Image 1 (cartoon, one colour):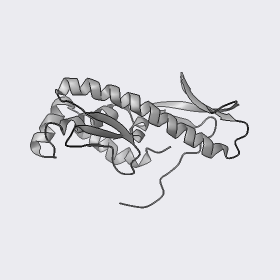
Image 2 (image 1 turned 60 degrees about the horizontal axis):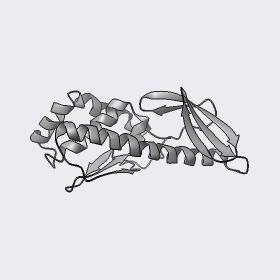
Image 3 (image 1 turned 90 degrees about the vertical axis):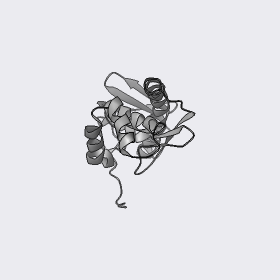
Image 4 (image 1 turned 180 degrees about the horizontal axis):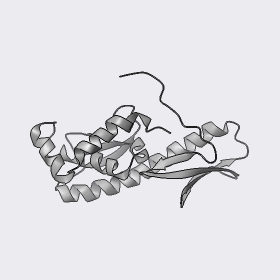
Amino acid sequence: KNSLPRPQRPLVTGQQVPYLGEEYTLQIQQAGKGSVSMRPGELLVSIPKRVRQREKYCRQQLLDWYRQQAQSVFRQKVAEQALRIGVQVRSTKIRSYRARWGSCSQHGELTFNWKLLLAPEAICEHVVIHELCHLKEHNHSPAFWHWVSQYDPDFRAHIDWLKKHGQMLEL
């Protein structure tokens, strides 16, 4: 599509960082080893003293943390929704895509973009339902959209939200 650079938020103490629809205040501290942890209202990034490029290091720590979180968040959501929809999933993977939120193979292998964790939780649910419905109908036919509407009655609003805000889901 367009090749404009994506907006990157400055990663400094006090910066607001989204996670599943909530804003967390970034707290960056010096520590013995690098880590990311979540506290009520805060995301705490620890950076070793020896690190020179602190913002680059902080960004990488956060990217790794979001990917880890995505693995467990999407596994749980897929398990819950697959049961509800009545489909079998072979695997759930996390990727970083520029212009895709999820995918579903013919064999039941689902892939999700970790950047969805920067969106409200309802948007994550929508993408999970969308991909799981492809296990019933592997296309975007009226039958497919009928299934999606059964499990996500607000799917049109969720699609609109992604169209409007999706390019801003960046760290």
